[in-house]
View 1 (cartoon, rainbow, N blue to C red):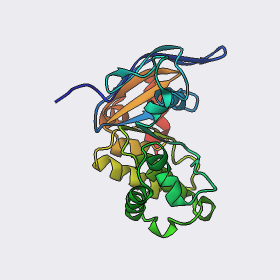
View 2: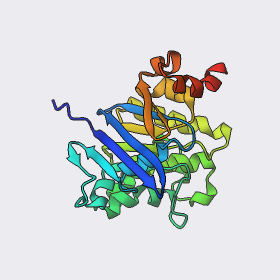
View 3: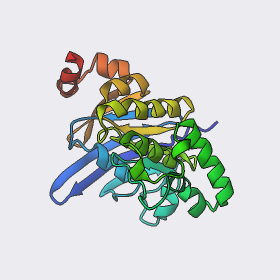
View 4: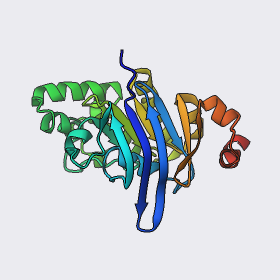
Length: 247
């Protein structure tokens, strides 16, 4: 049995112009672990996820995926992205493709599966999440919650080694949030390795194995949800969580 983490971030720095967004972030994520990134808007959560998927190149530090330094400039970016599933807050489904074609696109184009095999797996996924009736529909015929569930299905259709979720409920109406979070809860029970940036504190407390509080581009505190939410050690964490705990 290997003990190599799925993901390891070492001293990650990232600036945009004169603005330092990430200032020396260290993080490891083990297989089948769900890690929730919490923090105020602008704390660096989304940028950190984008550096993991190489949408942003780090200024300093290293990103390791399954023991390989993928932040090396010689890395073939598309090969790395094929191993990582990503879901953003805005669904980013291709409007000119049906739901099923969206879900199966990477399987067919990147992994060279036959259309029949890809569609059989895609329909099975859509059946599981209650979207089989919409398989031949276009995204504009779906509700926001349905579109986001379809985006998650697309991200996991290729069995990625790591799933990144970036504020996937922030663009949804409140009544649609539960159906999307229930799907993430199901993925956790299946053993999916997940790093998620979220403002859903109750969900992070209930589902995450570990909570990481980012503040001004640094990891201010991390630990088990019961510890971070129930007995935070840092004053910055206490101040951030006070509004949620008060409710």
